[in-house]
Image 1 (cartoon, rainbow, N blue to C red):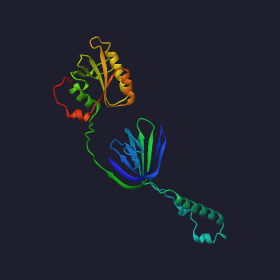
Image 2: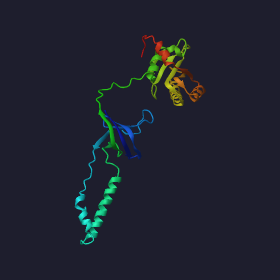
Image 3: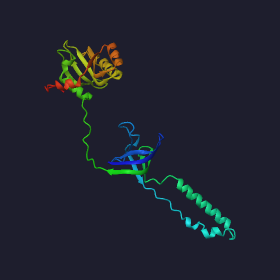
Image 4: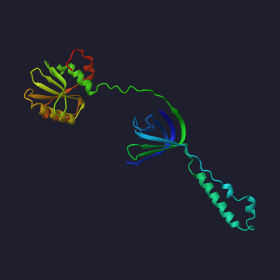
Length: 272
């Protein structure tokens, strides 16, 4: 991992054209050659980036060398321009050189580095011009074990299957990931009255989840060994629109308290 703090500008060209004017920013260059540009603005999201797979080329611009001595007119020549043949041409040459010098003095300073990052999947190119480097450090981060998420849908499914009576007293678990022709429903259970219950679990329940449960219940009710099957929509949060739609379709809604479920897990034997 290479971290550079620098005054830089950037131009992204390809499917989307975008640019960043010169400012002090942080450049992150990863081992896969992806480059990300950060600033104090925002939070975790970079201002611009080129993701892997890509190739990166670092260029250090060299100053142009112009030999002006060949065209400079000496002071002694300048004093005699009125009498030396071709003096007018010498004056014009000197004025031209002076103009070039003035232009160079007003031009932007030569950048310290230029990074050119090209995507290997498209014609997209990110070019970063570094005007001044404040810090340039490289770190070996080693192998990362990855992010371990807590409270994902699989965890909610695991705990609800272990505590199936949360859906009603006397309920029993049939199995997790109960198969249907359009994919598995999260939990199939039997309630205290002996009726099958198809349970769809989400972290944040929206209308899409209710539509998904609708497809499962419709297909499951075609199986005479299961019918009648009722639906239950379980989530940590359920939007008002999803709750209205679920109720209209005859589904029960169940709010899952993940912290409470973790605290009451009894680690008893379960089928799945």
